[in-house]
Length: 142
Length: 59
Image (cartoon, rainbow over all chains, first blue to last red; front, side):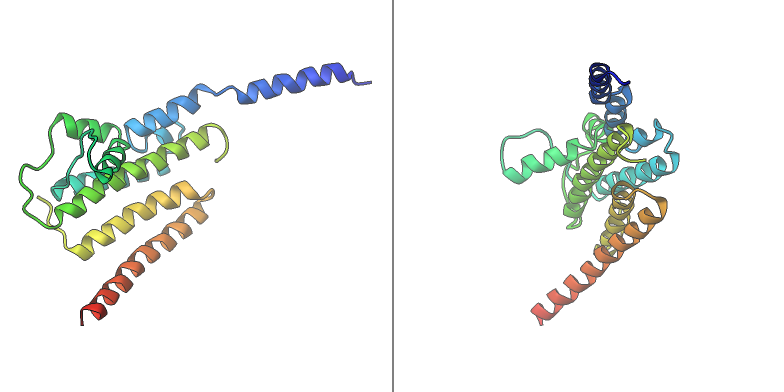
C-alpha cells in the first residue's frame, strides 16, 4: 500500500527539480545573445543555428554596409532609446561595431535609414533567437 | 558601401526575417519551412501592395 506521506515528499522533490534551472537554460540564451545562433549550436541544433547565424549576421552587416546608424546609449528621443535597445540585442555584433566605431561619419544615401532599420531588426531577431534557445534548453521545444 | 535598391532591401529584409520567424515560431522542420515561406510571401506581398497603394495615392 502506498504511503501518502512518501508520495507527497516525492512530488515535492520532482517539483523542486523541475523548477531548478539547468546550466544550459542560462548558458544557451547568454551565448545565443552574444553570438547569433550559438545558443542553438551549443545544444546540437546545427542546422537551425547556422541558418539563424547567417540570417542575423548578414542582416546586421548589410545594415552596416548601407551606412546604417549604430545607436549609443542615450536619454533623448524615445525612438532613439528604443533603437539603442534593439541594437544592443544584437549582442556581440553590437559590441564589435561600437568598439570598431563602424558608425558612418557623413550619411550620403537615403538608404542609410534602411540600414539603421536592418541593424535594429537584426538585434530584435537575435533576441527572438536567444529566447528560442532558452525554450529548447528548458524542454519547451525540441 | 553596399548599394541595394529599395525593393532589393525589402526582399532581403523579408528573407532574413522569415528564416528567423520560421525557425523560432514552429516545432517541426516541415512547419518551419511552411511558416517561413508564408511570412516571406506576406512580407513581399505587403511591399508590393503598399507600393501600388502609394502609386495610386500619388496619381
